[in-house]
Image (cartoon, rainbow over all chains, first blue to last red; front, side, top):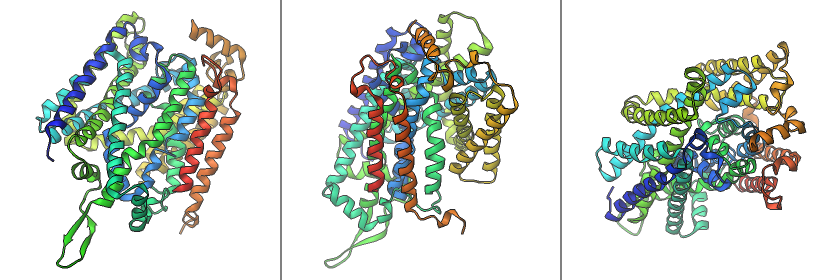
Length: 516
Length: 66
């Protein structure tokens, strides 16, 4: 791919600017609350764009464009049915409970609601997953710089690590969230530019869709038949829409953490809800390029005479090449650099959020609980920063390993998917049903995970595994809870629906605690 | 052919629309005081239920079109 001078300038300018901008926030960090929760000062609009920046990674660009190339607009389900309802539920049900209880992490809430073992299991699993993700993120961003600019691979990884590591270690969540806003803006400018160029080449929006519906009518259907190997409609609705997506938007620490740093409960809820508006538009960024590639990436053979023949196969053999093909063949110099910056921004916003959330989980739920219980706030701030630094170093060292053994990423994804359904069932029952007991929570979580493992061994589609492990976990939780003695109301005050929304006294106490 | 294979594809849209309407009903039932907790003013645009209804409306339109 040819690299123009203007593209290189744009990329270097972006990386320098984001480092300086992120470093600006170091002066606001003097306590753990500042570091992990941005001093509880984040306004709703920063939270919104930070959530979207964290949510979209470079893998989404490549994978979703490839998915759209193969299956069409059904890929957008991951951004619509697989996000919007869950974001509404997260904003109007889950976030108020977490925010009012002043917790730093989702496992911390589960520990308060059930027992310490539930907190530890959740913290270790999510903590491990986030740390493993770092190696993959560093490798991907190094590979991008290496492929596009020709910089040495190790140097490319180091550049990403230094830029993101420095502002995350010094500025904490505030630096992460505010740089996410900038990165999100860059991503949308890049994505919308691609959409504009694509429609312009097709002769207009209407012309593009008319052309697509005549050549690939199946690609304009949002639901696909049950025999589709990746996006069967039943799995999309029940597995993705009702379980995986709520688990992601209600219990994923890197998503939820910025709402816990909100300056008020309303800002926390509004931040999550407003993020759903740009989320609806994300298919413009990640799905449309796949459709452009489908329409424009055909090989033309000039035959003698007045005819042009179109080969039946597109010029792209691997669907994941759809987006690189669009960048290479459709975009002019300068714009290609901007879109490349959008990739880098997508990766950086995911790396910084992952670093900060992993550090929060390991400091609050593991170190503070099992290694050193009663130390000063300054000590925990130092530990949080040291752990962030360690995770950066680990990510850099681990990056080439993840490339050599891609099975690591798949194994981590599988491990997490076993927990998604049971985590959601445990969290929702914990909030909604006062009768759910600490043992109900423990056995519901572990039993649900065991059922997911069994279903996985029987090679069930992961969307169905998510749904049925959610059902199994909820059932076990209910049954065990009925056979164990109920929790005392004092323990549940402010933690469950019955002792919060229907209890004025509990609301008053929590309000005073938060304001105090 | 099992039971699910016999369900026509358009029923996916009907189920989706039903779930969105159910969600809208649940949002409507959320108490206003709970929604506005922490809001600096009680202006109408701060009622997050309205935001949720707009989102649900857009989603229903998109699933109707495609």
